[in-house]
Length: 172
Image (cartoon, rainbow, N blue to C red; front, side, top):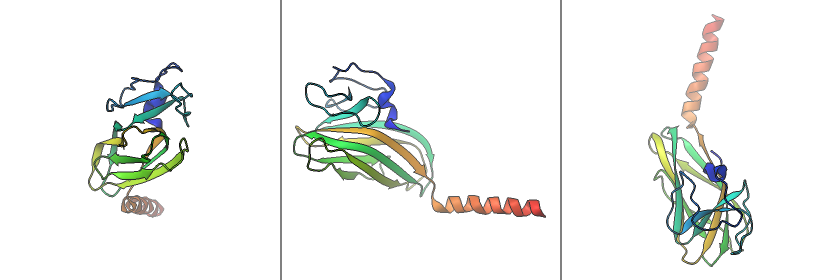
């Protein structure tokens, strides 16, 4: 999943507030914007045309369906930047596996490329990916969201052993 359907919907370039993308509910302080510079000074999208906009305090989230086994790694990558204000932190959580804080830096409109890894503590078939921005009066943007699941190493080893057994069996 890349960008979580941010770019499935087209907004007018002037569109700024109250844009909603199906599958990404958020608080009243969040919206999605066309990634061009608008009168309030938002920056450009780093991928596609739209960008997730969080006007703190606020959040956006998406429910993702996948087969994730205990021990699997969930790798979330995304671009983020602080548009204005003084709070420069964003909190990310997936399926209740623990919130991780990302520092957006001290420079306004300075894009940071972020990678967060979660480890599944039980089997998961559906989980919420949530971005929280707690700073009052501070705006931040997220874009180029990607979620990948990397199987737990022992599962990969079992697959390898099974494949080796099949090859040896064919040889006999």
